[in-house]
Amino acid sequence: MSTTTLARCGAALLLAAFISGCAAMHHQRSDRVNQCKQNPNSCQYQGAYEPGERAYAEQEAKRLNQAESNKIRGW
Image 1 (cartoon, helix red, strand yellow):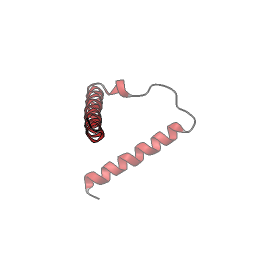
Image 2: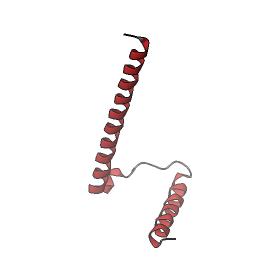
Image 3: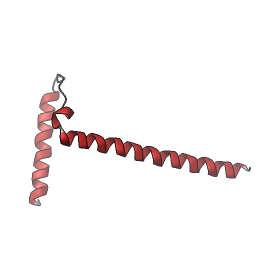
Image 4: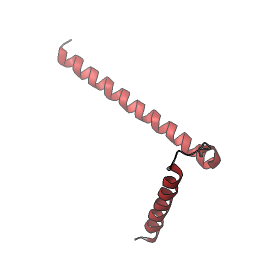
């Protein structure tokens, strides 16, 4: 086999591995989403906040909620 043929086969195998890896990651993520829809409490973090983290999380939640409200209203 020539070097060019080996390079093409290697590239094809790498592409196939990448595509199959992405498909597997998507499947795992959708399983997690379904789990959270069925039991939201299982997806909530129960540990302590780091300093300043709680305020940041609350502010970010307000921002995201406002963005969604604006999107729904069509603003």
